[in-house]
Image 1 (cartoon, rainbow, N blue to C red):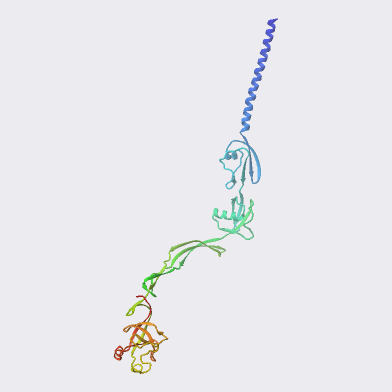
Image 2 (image 1 turned 90 degrees about the horizontal axis):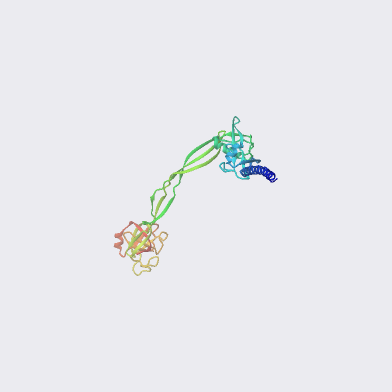
Length: 354
């Protein structure tokens, strides 16, 4: 009996062991599958692609954006705008925006048709882009607005214009500068440096439509020759003259006809003892250095220096002394006769400087 019990026990144990082995194998397989599934799930990303405002959702593995586009057959045109760097790695919940370029048709002068791809949204901006890229010089025909929105497939009618660049020369007037020269006599002016006009070249862009000038624009100015400032020296040195009474500034120089007189009867008709003898018209005593003048030319009291006579004061008049005439006094008739009549320079004296 004990042998049967042992045999049955052995059989049960063996069957259980077999089941245990199967269970363990299943557990190992499931464990491996779950691990693989978890690893797969962790590497799978959801990417949202927005093309011209329309949303598209993709599930993809870890890869570059460029590889993702190739895998999903998302083509990027020459002027399409993508807001994400194509070398960037895909990440979880990534959103990529793509703005597709539009194709428009330019009709030039009603004849030539040119297709053009753009990503700009205003007709005026697209027109400039078209001119810059193709070298065409065109403008919008009437009835079209540069502010209009660009629509895929739209036609833009334009007309050619002609552009000319002209260069003109223009003089630049020289400036004048005055400087004082203390070594130059007062009132004298000297041109130290002669002024010269400069020259500038001006480039002008002219726009012609149907051979009619529409606009002019200065695009460049260049000075090719600098103007030379004219420098004028103005004398500040006072003209002076040395007399027996000192050195005086010369206020005026007058060329006059000079005669001579005395206090005697030969000149005045008066003799010693007569009323008013020896007294001048200004009340001064008649003596050497007192001269007769036309007070409309030289007022009484004016200090003078007379060539060939010397320092004098205007203090008398005479019926024959009119205009630029002067009568100088001598004590003796013989000295007056010896002096005679002559033309002299008469200097009107100003302040005494020495």
